[in-house]
Amino acid sequence: MAIRKILLPLTGTTAGEAALSTALTAATFWNAHVSALHVRVDARDVAPLAGEGLSGAMIEEMMSATEKESAERAHAVRTLFDRFVASHGIVLAEARAGALGATASFAAVMGREEDLVAQLARLADLTVVAHPDTGADVSSSDALHAVLFDSGRPVLVAPPAVPQTLGSRVCIAWNGTAESAAAVLAALPWLQRASAVRVLSAAEYQRSGPPAQDLLPYLALHNVHAELGTFKARERDVGAGLLAATAEFGCDLLAMGAYSHSRLRQLILGGVTRHVLEHAALPVLMSR
Image (cartoon, rainbow, N blue to C red; front, side):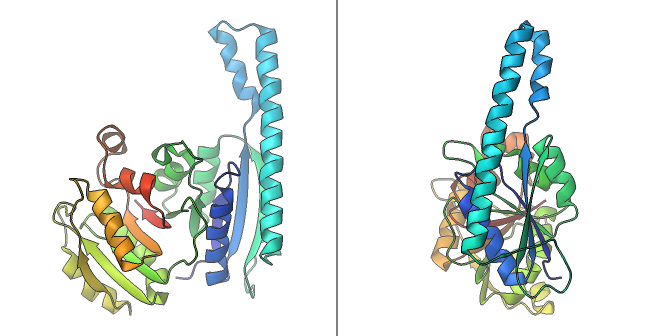
């Protein structure tokens, strides 16, 4: 299945350029449409704070400040989008069948980002999520988890910096789980067009399920020639070992399942998903 529609939620501008570049690179690769979305904060969401002992005047002042900040952020995001699209020669148009090249559109709406993104992602082949601003925790990204848990579709987490290439050397993080199987299915279009594919596994990463070597003949049935690679945890951290293995391969796209353990457990104790989200310097295609 080819990728035809890419959803791109844009919250801010700090990591927006890398996310735009990732999404537009993917769109150019697939002759796809990028539907950029900015969800504005609704100032009326501040109103319930009146029950917390704040006066009407204080609530009104907070609503006014929220509206001003929301408008300024929306303007900055739209300016970034227009400048970036123009400089890369991307056609501004609505999604349509038979387009000869990448196209893009922009919409700004009011509401709760996690709800709207999850719903719209259900009618997109891929959602590209920006890496959070410096100092923020990527594992707490509302847009990311909305797509992972509520859309039934894969999410591509953009790296902090603009990627130079995308999808030429692909790694699969395999541990036998249903989540890693979903990641392989989502990655198949990329795998079929990649110049090199490596399946990465580790004894510490493997769960109950098919071993990595059993994945190779399955991929061959889909015309994907892959090699097998193993890695070891670094300082008892499996995620660090996985990322080191991708760097050694020169990987520019990592496909992996997300949260085979519960998200709460990973937030509290750590885990491979969390480590990759926080430390990956390459695009990561995640499925659950």
